[in-house]
Length: 381
Image 1 (tube, one colour):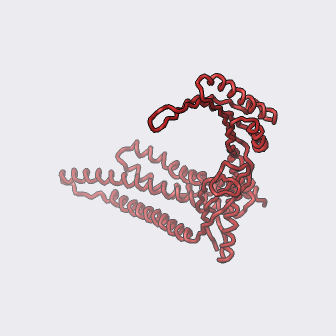
Image 2: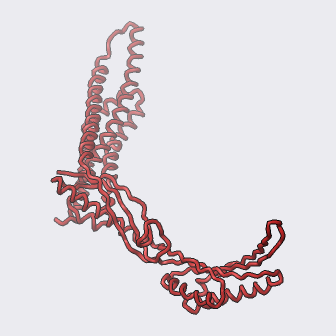
């Protein structure tokens, strides 16, 4: 039988088994439950209880069955799920176990309901006995008391069985939890920046206020030279943003506050945002030609960014998980055990740094992307 066939057959088989188990439980308790609700003073309420009881037993069992998902951190697609027969068997066992837990919870809830019914019956009987005693009829209500004792014993048995199951399950889980191995998985990628941001500043300075108009004309001329150099080397007009020209008048005085000199400064900027990151470094070196022509240029260092992190996240997380399992397998082999499923997993943050750097993340075109996952695996014999 192929794993795909096994998945389909086992899924429906376990589902039917959970349903049959809940129906058997209902059949076992139906008569006792009916007798209790029939003696309840509120006949209509007892009828409602009897009709709801079947669904109150079967639906929780089915809910527990359907609550188990076959997807996990390491099995996140259909092909990965059907490729591992041991994983499918473990999931079938988990479906049956969770269904039994839900069924036990339902029984405990109905136990509380029956207990409330019995308390109501007891209070009613006591009132009836007190009334008959006042009339001189001291005949005890043996049948009702006998019914109370039998059902009370049944409730105690159910409570002990349910409590014992959960205590045993807790002890089992705590024992299994001790046999675990916590490992870390690392995944790294070297990527190339896909965005570049580059700012060029240019400045013109004069000593007379009357020169401001000429300074502005020179500033526009310098700006045009910068733009021409950029476009001639391959940048488009859409990638070039012209900044506002800032004007500043700075006064210089001596110790007696006598005005010595006033400098008038116009500073403009040209910003480039492009996906052609290789072109930035090439053109940046050619800015020296404008400096040789007498332009006062501040050639700022460009910033490089990688913006496609979401595209490589899934594969990197998958690789980190696989590396963590390899480390766990190495540990288990030395200890003489086997690696089971994942108990818990946590993902560290993705870090992007320049190649060869520890903290810098915007100076170089080539980047290192890194993620570390921490995974706890069960270890089995």
